[in-house]
Structures are given as C-alpha cells and as structure tokens.
Image (cartoon, rainbow, N blue to C red):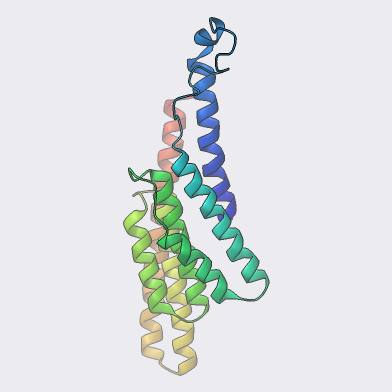
Length: 200
C-alpha cells in the first residue's frame, strides 16, 4: 500500500509534466526549426527535479522497509523509514512531500506499536498530523493508526493485568477511530459533491 501511494504521487507528477507540455506547446512545435527541442517547454522545469528525487528516495526507503520486514527485521525497517524522515525535503514545502512524510510517520507508528513502543508511536502520529493537510485521507489515516496504537496499548495493559488503564486506552482507541471515520466520510462526501458539480 505504501509503495503504491508513493508510485501514484510520482507518476502523477510525471503525467502532469507531460500533459502540460503536450497542451501548451503544440503551436511552438509546429514552427520549430531543425535542431530545436521537441518540446518548447523542455528548458523549463514544470516539475521540480528535487521533488521527483525526494519521491524516488521515499519509494526506495519504503521498499527497503518492506525487504527488512520480509526478512523478519522490523528494527531495520524502522531505521530505513527514520532515514527518510530525517532527510532534507524539497524547498517550498510541496504538498506531495508533506503527504509522503506524513504517511511515513503513520507507517512508523504502526511498526513501533507492533513492537510495543506505544509512546513513540503516538509521537509519530502527532508529527504526521502536523504535516497532513486537513481534512484529507492522509489525516484520516493518521487518526486510524492512532486508534490502532491505543488498541494495541490496551491489549498490552490487559496482559499486564492493568484493567483500568486498558479500559482508558480502549476508550481513546474508539474515539480516535470514530474521528478517522468522520474525516474519511467528509473527504468522500466532498469528492462526490465535486464530481456532481463538475460532471465530465
């Protein structure tokens, strides 16, 4: 799922660049002299190469995490994702970079909570929420992960015999998951409304 999201963002940018060139430069190409660039926009940077490099690096980091998990090494998977979080981001705060980083925090939270590091997982969720646009499915996904973190915390507390703390964690989990549902419902409703207002 993670690699698919990154690939979608990556390909979306490339497609936008190609279509922008195809639409805007047809007249220029018709009058181009021999030896001129095939596309008049070729010298211009329609898509920031730094952003493309960041997205490619992100895909590689998530693939590395996948490989580590497949080898039974979640610590190495976390390390691969932490490297992406610590890496410099493209200038200008492009939304694609923020969304990918927010998603990476969500995955880190899942991995840390699986290892029982619930407080660190909660901090990852908080960091991701500072980056995720609101409302968006990225924000909703982070609240979903936050709910899963608290659900796992409750189970761990139950196993320790701390019933009261477990009940509190379960209550937090329900609240967070309900918020995730509310956000995603809003995202879906707005998307459907936009589709009805602008039919193809």
